[in-house]
Amino acid sequence: MWAKIEKKLGTFLICYFNVKKIGFAEREGFEPPEAFTSTVFKTAAIDHSATSPPQKYTYFIPFFFYTIFFYNYNILIYLQVICNCFISFYMTTITPIFRTLFLIIIAILLFSCEPKPPKDSFKTTPYELQIPKYFPTHLNIPTDNPLTVEGIELGRHLFYEERLCGYLGNDPDLMMGCATCHLQSNNFSVGMNHPRFPNGKTFGLAGDSTPHNTMSLMNLVFNREGYMWNGLIHESNPNYTQRNLEDIVLMTILAPHEMNSTPEKTVYALKQNPKYPPLFIKAFGTEEITIERVQKAIAQFIRTLVSGNSKFDRYLRKEEKLSDAEMRGFILFSTEEGADCFHCHGGDGTPLFTTNLFYNNALSTFHTDPHDRYAVTGNQFDIGAYRAPSLRNIMVSAPYMHDGRFKTIDEVLEFYNFGLQQSPHVHPLMHKVEQGGAYLTPPQIEDLKTFLNTLSDNEFLSNPKFAKP
Ligand code: HEC
Ligand code: HEC
Image (tube, rainbow, N blue to C red; front, side, top):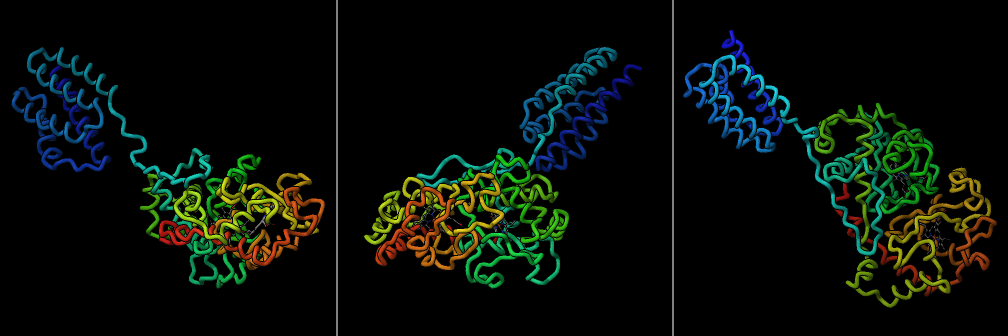
């Protein structure tokens, strides 16, 4: 009787461990050698409790080496193998009843130290964001969405995906992705010569105009003051769906003035494209396409859009010199007696070329926009205020201002030179508002413009890492 129980238990144990381990090995991407899985293992396992020792060794010896070679991820496996060898020796020396007891003890021990398969057996590669010299190092990356090489690659595909809006037909005017409005060559803004949006006047798939001019997507990972012209998207927003770049992705997909889609439509459309399952597996472990994953991947991609190699950056790093005109322009930019731009748009100490803060820069006398900074804070001082945009790559970011009112940089400079509009809401840092502008001479304006040109980062504007895959 004991011999029978022992035989059954022994056979079960051996089969169990073989099957388990082969299972692990396959999940880890190993192909167990045919000879071991089929002939040796199976026959040895079934004949295990036969008394002749040589048969046991034919099983245990190859098994031992096989284990060493293929399962070296867990020390427990070695212990199991050694236990197995012990079993085989003791089996031949003690009485059946003790052998069975011994087997039960071993079984309890082995089951309790059974190695768990790794929970997330897929691995992603952490992405090392290169922070240009003198840039802030405090980044806006949520802990639940760290940058990974695979996530960013998926994000790039999705950023350029024209079916993100959920449309499956063939009319190009009904397709829309992020890159429809955010073009790399235009600093990821819309630009003046867009075939679909002449003069940068964007509208969504429901036909409605966007409430504001398109913003550039650049150095956003350094912004912790709030996204959008009015900074609505900020971690302090009581609405948890409006706090970071991930949320902007979904808002864009839903907004009638943008993609006018639903999460279901968008996910369904993406599912029709066979290129996505492998990209989702690499980024998230399974091929499941969910709107949360889409949001995370695109947000990761946007966070890698770092511009920090303009001529001015090279000047700061002492790699290149500014011309006399560029230097004169820089001095005008950075002095209160000059054009006085630096308080809000930064300079050599704030090389993002923005403080990312909100100001009323004296554009208008009357403020009627329901989506200004005041709409977010309810603070009277914020009436007609907007986030000061970065002036990096400003030469390719037209049209300008939250409403896109200026089509050229000359118009902007003209405004700051003698077009300032007094109102009770103008920000105190607009020192020149009393006199209506900076009143620079035409050569000074030329110098200022020459300086602004040094903020263009052609490497960023044509970097293939950020381009359509
Ligand atoms: C129809 C044109 C359009 C499309 C398509 C579009 N955007 Fe935008 N985007 C805009 C406009 C307009 C703004 C400015 C919104 C505002 O503040 O009113 C903007 C602002 C943003 C901002 C804020 C930038 C900042 O500096 O605060 C981000 C981020 C952004 N978009 C990302 C995306 C992503 C991601 C997609 C694709 C999922 C996308 N956009 C698709 C027009 C568009
Ligand atoms: C008090 C802060 C402040 C000062 C000083 C200031 N700006 Fe601005 N600037 C802003 C704000 C805020 C905006 C966005 C306003 C809006 O869209 O309504 C802006 C917008 C701009 C834009 C358009 C950017 C875009 O992408 O649309 C340019 C160009 C610009 N400023 C250049 C300058 C120059 C040049 C000077 C110096 C002559 C200057 N600014 C001084 C706050 C300021």
